[in-house]
Image (cartoon, rainbow, N blue to C red; front, side, top):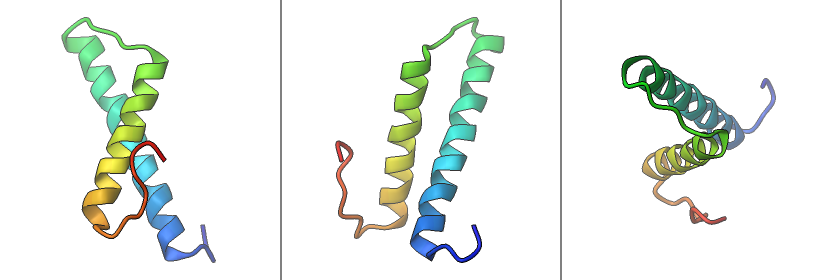
Length: 67
């Protein structure tokens, strides 16, 4: 990621952290609550978490969730 603009690095870093977070939460749900979610639902959770975290970090973010 060397030579990448800082904003691109931030986006990719947030997406990576959101992905790890969702996988960790799903793992806990499967182990402790015997509940599972579909891959599509997990992907949507990653997208939503990424957007919300980016929006909280950069209040001037010009994209909406549907973009």
